[in-house]
Image (cartoon, rainbow, N blue to C red; front, side, top):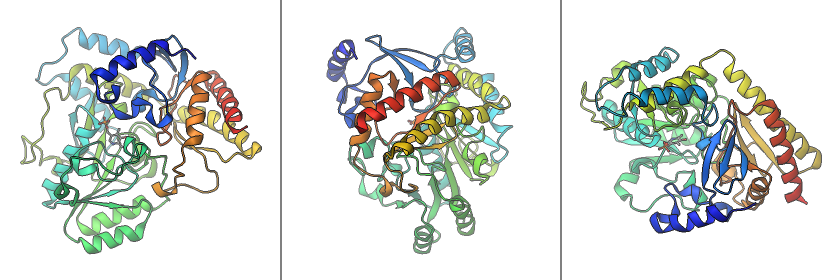
Length: 429
Ligand SMILES: *Cc1c(COP(=O)(O)O)cnc(C)c1O
């Protein structure tokens, strides 16, 4: 695989940006490589600056559920851009995107759009504190909720990749307001509420934890959280930045049928442009400025071009059968690889939900919390490299999941599975 141009661009980028990147995981550190600079994407494919072609399973880390440069998204964005890029005043496009979401998610009455997932979660935490008049929040080890101070406490994603459990620069006093519990552990939750009774504003969780492996929770854990929160006057906060519009239009909330008080979205909601959102029932959202005392704002919030991309993408997702077909095609891919790994006796499994999969070099047990993950990522490093050489692009970290898009046809997935099996055989021998 030629990497001459990417390597030269990376050398230049290192002069301009810390680590040569604008988001840490992109630096390829955890796979001992250097990043590929991507020139373009179309459907299920991306091309790098050296003209290597890849079947892409990163999908910009989740947003591109329709694949790259989807025609409906492209034309809606161009149409919006033709009318100007930003006004700092309301546009009808905000109403349209909100209607698409709210008419299909009856547990939320109102939304606020932001420009990233981090911003949505950070703002909604403030809302939870403002609404309840309490300070403490509960999060789970192995869930990532963006990089705001309150939530960068033993978080997953890029952080685990670098072997840190939190970030420098966060005052101890902030961290003390965040209680971190192990996933899938009812006793820990009960103990926490016993100890901090009447102090907990909310319990935040990725209902499908997918930023630090894919830590699918046992049936009943989310229902249990719902009951505990209700009993203690704390809000249940589902961070659906990855799972929202991914496993179902109504996200994990629809998938599991457990109703949170607050929900946050990001990634897919913006159709590949920067959008986040948080929502709740109207009595909770009434706390948000200008209706209420919880302040939150954004110069580019509800940006019309970004709204247009979201509208076009969510319109496609709302068509009947979309999610069934996503799941069917994903299994076509993962079942074939898993059957091969099993037949060969490899300690290897693709863990799957909806159109998300995660590569686990361990087939012996269900992995539900972060300490269950084997920290030796040697297998992933070798597989990542072997796949790049065979024209398959994965996000460069063994803790990150892969995403199948609507552009990954049966035929493309067949080819991808064959390459995957070939790469697996090569690294296992
Ligand atoms: C990606 C992600 C975030 C952060 O969103 P950004 O847009 O990267 O700021 C927060 N929560 C979850 C669950 C995510 O997957």
